[in-house]
Image (tube, rainbow, N blue to C red; front, side, top):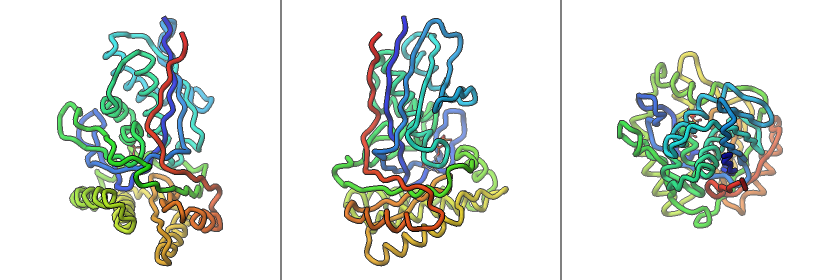
Length: 329
Ligand code: DP6
């Protein structure tokens, strides 16, 4: 029998970054992280388990992507084992934003994959379990299972079962907006997984990154609990710059910023100094994500749209967790 379902999951951005992996093959992060889920950037994924298929298949944004199958099948295998079936699946996924450009398409993609596949197989899994399975595809995907403010726990168990995300605060409890300034759509950066491995192996600052991370997590949790934007800005920007400093000192160097990224960072710092509630963060690509109070959004958008070299602006609020739908059989 053919079993199918669809899911929509949103992308997320980390305020305290995940950078570094624990030993082993379970894709357990070396550190926890805290993120916000973005409403307007999503992956829509359909998973069809079909007894006629001999292998899993993946179509991403209209193209066959056999290169992406290792991680996809790893997630599907876990779900197949839980459901006691061996049926292969056809996965068709699309993003409504640029794929692989540092906008966390793997986060939304794997969260949607796991949500849709579990639904298609009729598995009644807790969100926490979905998060553990999504982590196997991509560490940041564990966070996209949930909406609003989310904490990922690194965990310590050898089976990885305590390495999951959970909600910290609903988005409506502290509505924030995000203005993404896209500074390059083409350039392919070093993927975050390889970047963090290189950083751990060769950056003299990796140890300092690990050592100071717990304190950032505590400051960020506290800033969220007390809705203290200035405190959030301090810790989020520090975590972002620390991650990039460690990455830049790797051999060979990992420089994810371009000139426009740096100019935008300067502009955002200037805006905050002048009283606008806005902070910046940057992931494994040159895009700038400005997180701001809703009443600052127009000013932030106008300022970033004005920066030479910004090619696209995406605006969003905070979004929900993964949503799934069964397909009629
Ligand atoms: C810089 O989740 O993409 O965006 O687990 O190898 O798939 P893998 O890595 P991934 O790493 C995200 C790194 C980051 C920071 C973050 O989102 O926390």
